[in-house]
Image 1 (cartoon, one colour):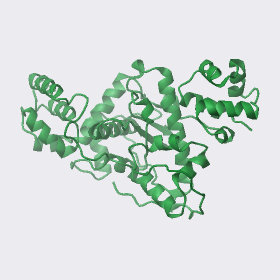
Image 2 (tube, rainbow, N blue to C red):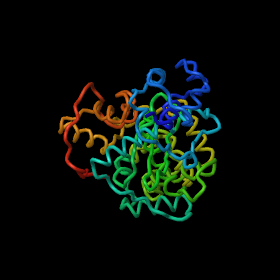
Image 3 (cartoon, one colour):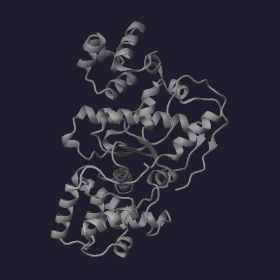
Image 4 (cartoon, helix red, strand yellow):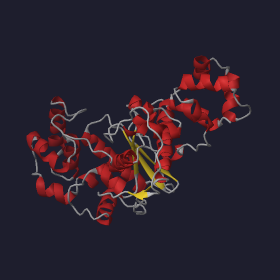
Length: 362
């Protein structure tokens, strides 16, 4: 039996309108509308045409109902500039990643969410409180993906085919998710991870989480979380030159622009010094990239350990994709840049030990 919500999700994942899918699959627009609303069910041959047009295995469409990630719980950084269908596609990709998480959670014990609920403090105070709660003090933040995972946040990558979409975070029930754009520099991905943590901490389901003000708050949280005031004031001189900024950014593994902004925010750079530093950094290529930046991207320990554990039982990643009704390529996009595990062909289902615990470190 075909599940209507799965047709809709697959269509959104590919960024298609009903009219566009109708043309691609050779199925009437009215029929497609009926299939997605559940008024009628497609025949087997029609499902095959839809599967071919959407690039999903036919078995995907007969799985259980799927609840998409809540649209009203996501703060998109460039919503006004990004087409709605692109945002829908990114949310659909996130929903598929959540299905993978459900599959993993049935077999492995993952950390319980440990996100402080702080009322409505200012971003600087919120960052300090989370650092204190998590025992970070004023030391440079460790691997951000590991840190989020150790505190129960499920981290996946955004599909590379929607590189224009920034990272986003969302609560799915009591489980927090963060989706990172891994096409950026390693330093900017760290900032994105801290930015989305800010949303989870400051903009829960009962608080406003959209709009420019929420984005400013999340940016300020990320800046304070990654570069504690006492640490920056202790390491960086007032009026630092660009070469000093480039040397100093390695202390916190942040971008040169992020450190420059933080120094200006803390009064270490005057307005003129800040503008001059930004201009010079831009001329040196630091506006959109990070020359001579971090050597390695921060990756997921949860996903890496899960797939290593599965391989030890004889279950290959491609078999996991098959159980989810996905292609290996689709599942790879959830893991892109977060794990060295790549989905290779074949693989048989193996008997798994019940809910093995993963040993995680921040």
